[in-house]
Amino acid sequence: MDKGLQAGYEIAFREYRFIFSRGGAYTGIALILLGAILDYGIYPDKQLEFAAARLACSILVFVIILVMATEWGKERIQPLTFLWLLLPQIMICWMIAVTDGAKSIFYSGLNLAIFASGIALPFGLKVNVSLGVLSYLLYVIACSFHPESFGFHGDFVVNSFLLVFSAIASAVCTFYNERGRLMLFRLKAEVAEKNEQLEETNKNLIKIKGQMIQQEKMAAIGTLSAGLLHEVNNPVNYCLMAMDVAIEDPVSNASQSLRECLQDAKQGMQRVQHIVSDLKTFAYRKGDAEGRDFLFEKAVGSAIRLVGHETKGIAVTSDMPKDTLVNGDEAAIIGVLVNLLGNAALALHAANRPNPSIQIAAKWENDRFFVSVTDNGPGIAPENLGRVFEPFFTTRDVGQGLGLGLSISYSVIERHGGTLFAESAYGAWTRMIFDLPRAS
Image (cartoon, rainbow, N blue to C red):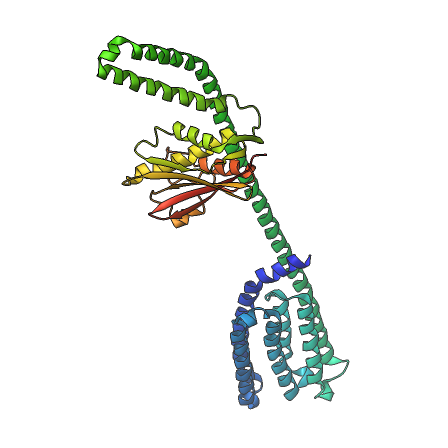
């Protein structure tokens, strides 16, 4: 396992080690104190002496539990666990030394601790082997106080064999337990990595889907516009010519109201002519239009006219510098402006603001043309401000929108090397800002 994965494993299993070590320590305290029953049954003459030792050992183990609960202790769970396991081993070996040496039944307590360290506690192999070796050395020292039972025969040999067997079995269990935990962690890490990749893939698919929907919309608008150019433009021209003739007719000159009606009708037909002219941008779009120079103020005028129905009753103003020549996809930028203006208009109408207004402002900063679209609507809630550009995120009612408009607009600006971002004061205003490159 590489160092990064090993470090992650240690962090992830720190709490796991703490819980198991603490539980084992409490169990150890209970077993140490219950061992007083053995003292009463086997060595009643040493009962008080052993009780004091058991109480002292239990207190020390409890102190280690308190230390393990601290941040410092949680970073050192294995050595602290090793320490509290070694304390009862020292106590047991002392009891063996002051009683019958190799003949003492207390040696079984050493086996119990060694087995627990390998089977129940989340030890590493080195720590577990160290505990087994130290436990056996302490046992040898304890038995050395009784030369009559110490030697390569009888109880000492049998007990030594059992202790060594316990240490080996415990080490094997520790090795495979640790290996199993490592494999589990590695699998979890791989699953998490695959989930991140899947999430990234889903985001890319959503973005591609949004772009395809946008392209289909643009293609549909282009097809519609091409037909309108032929089917609408000619009749509009005929109507305008007829109105000009009618306005010059003596009958209309004699009637002020008739002349005003003809003028209003002419203005209406001219508006239709402007809208058809704006739609030419979409109708004659060939391939990727990025890299073409266009006047941004012209794109703004087209967008304002295209959303004229939605912005009725709203004051739409623009503040442009003298030079607005930028480089990019004019049709796509008009689409972005239409989306931003439409969203602002919907918010203003929904809030029923007095004196609703939308201001479009632009300025040059180095070679980037920064544009802001500001409305005095209800603003965006702080918890939603960071999500407005997420695909399919919308605060509108069901059926009122897919929540793709701002996501697609973000992608369009990103393709132009810029960034679209939102600023808002909840309950006061919303501002959308993006930037475009200077004309080539």
